[in-house]
Length: 77
Image (cartoon, rainbow, N blue to C red):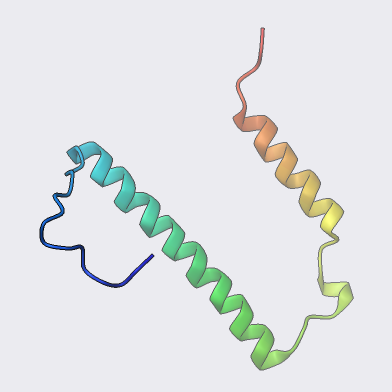
């Protein structure tokens, strides 16, 4: 995305109020996720990588994530 302003002759389509609220909520969630990720990277840069014993194997993380996705998905008849 460009940081340049849109040309003056280009009309912009305004969002419906509910859509604007949804876009702002998505932006806030994305910003929060990016801030959390940046904090983790800064911690690694400052303190180094955690020991293997302190880490969760990726297989456990994958299974937990798949379980969350399954719980969110409505049952199919």
